[in-house]
Length: 103
Image (cartoon, one colour):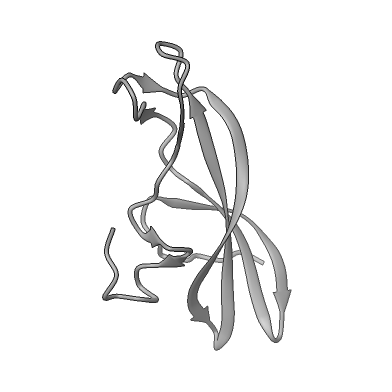
């Protein structure tokens, strides 16, 4: 099954579960480079990836969960690690699900 979430700055990796009662979709942020939170140096070196469950709007009437493959980047300049953020994900839910909550 192909699915379009219409969530900016996000790419669908795969549909994990396509059940009549729920939809689970793995996603990744489009950005491949972030700035180090300590020194501001740009880095693209992925140190680790963690899966984070994020609630989203229902798709076709089914509760939808995004599994965000959230990356931690390593800085080659200062050796600090920085976890990526997403402009449309706040507190494990998309902004469009809880429109009053902004980053």
